[in-house]
Image 1 (cartoon, rainbow, N blue to C red):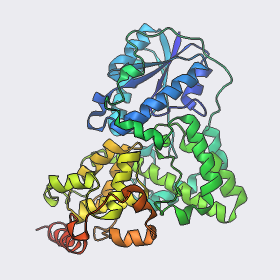
Image 2 (image 1 turned 180 degrees about the vertical axis):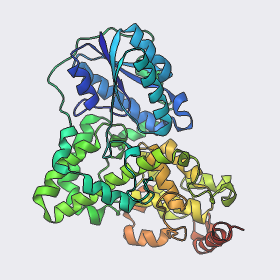
Image 3 (image 1 turned 180 degrees about the horizontal axis):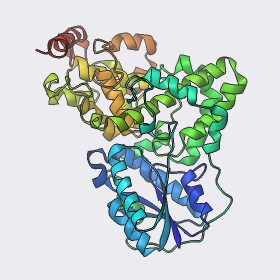
Length: 461
């Protein structure tokens, strides 16, 4: 009998509890990855994410071969293919790491139910700070948290850093008995993840996907950037953030692994460096809050949490939307951010807030339009983070920023890009537009946004 190991968003071999569990069974391992865009529907990976996924799967496949495990690829419906493989390969145990996205959980539950009904052992692994989102509720009302600060305070009070590493299972020094290729398995190239137009080749200039680079990035961040994290994370031209987001999304590194490295800094070193590490830990909890929110409010991936922000609240403006997408708004820091996104597959966190605020408030275009563009172009496009980030800025989501908080991109540029290094780097002196040619006048559009909010949201007219 064999063990089936289903990789999803845990594309690494070290500190991977699902892989460790499979090895512990002492049986040949059938390792699989299923690309099923039809199951993810509108939230199937965008072009930039597919490029990352392809590179990550290649490294994972190479690393697994060192353990005599061949990663086999399928482009299929997971609910159908896994029971078929269980029968074909005489599998007695199936193990995978949960994705914790509501639409994916439905499929995983169906698979688990069918396997258990047929006498197959199933092991589902949870990763993250909270064991399961539905177990973590407010003490007063036993309802999901809607505000980050109390969520953070409760989680942080229950997070024992000294014991956290226990869940960080080490890879066994053993190999698996090779299994035969399964019927209908494909090569990685046959998954067709890469667009035929080689636009994505430019991403190689900015990123190196994979588990090895994830570890190196974390080490570099702790050694070089963590000490100044609070003062430099908002400066777009400085690499003051960890750059771990895409590695985290695909599980090339886990939250557990990161916290294990932060623990001695927080608990032993103390002082300023511990404060910086604690601030970074808070950002990891923010990611957890995004996942938690999407779990409890799955409709928010497409609908505003505040129902007053319906389609009637937003404008339809295809011409200016395209200018925003192409970085041709005439507002330097906005255009620099959109150029960075297109060229590198990412955008600095501070600038993400600015471009989102301009689109949803000054331009009055729906947050869904912005979220979809980010989804297609970000290498770290994560459904939970993308959804909560856009709704937060738009003022219609959980723990949202007050709608009247409308970022002024010119003021923000003077504060966070004083010498224009970020703007000059990404615009490269290509912007010849005058302020009068901008898509909106910042003062007038701000006033219009507030009028729209007061008449439609506050007074319901």
